[in-house]
Image 1 (cartoon, helix red, strand yellow):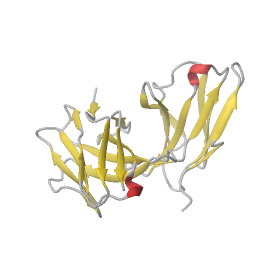
Image 2 (image 1 turned 90 degrees about the vertical axis):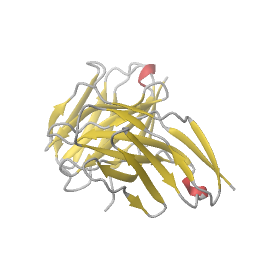
Image 3 (image 1 turned 45 degrees about the vertical axis):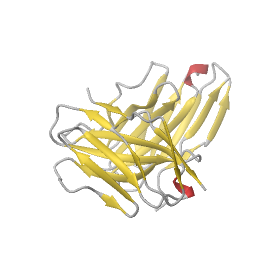
Length: 116
Length: 112
């Protein structure tokens, strides 16, 4: 079974600074997808970024980028120019790419606070 | 696009009562998922459907839980009878074929 580990329960960052959230996972599969979801106080789960394991290039979405290290099974999220609206819980998630493997496995989350 | 719609947003009920949570997926999405989020266990998949057919319900905790998807635009998750330990946030998510899941706003259920 796949597991996802987020080792930082809480983090804080000054507004406009850069912060990196860590995620590691365990799988025996070669092809899979990785995601970062954001859950602000409104509790809506919002997709931040996704990465396909067969792509070597790291995904980027505006101020959000990932550092995907397949051999190390590491998938960290970097937030640049942090904004107050980035304050939220961040969840790392894993999904196999094989047919019938649509379950998302989530980490426990990292609570990020952006300080003015 | 309105996104995934869930109702009610909040539900407070007493132990033993029947609870029905509702979900409208994004139009054109073939997959629908029900998740439960608690402090102790985090986010857990309960069941998912493909083209209205239940595919995997191994995450449904007990026979008290049931889910249906009578058509492509509507799904329900029912708990009967409800218990205090069912208190949680329940999310519905939908996705196109084998792709990213988009979540609804969730229903916060409190069972007294």
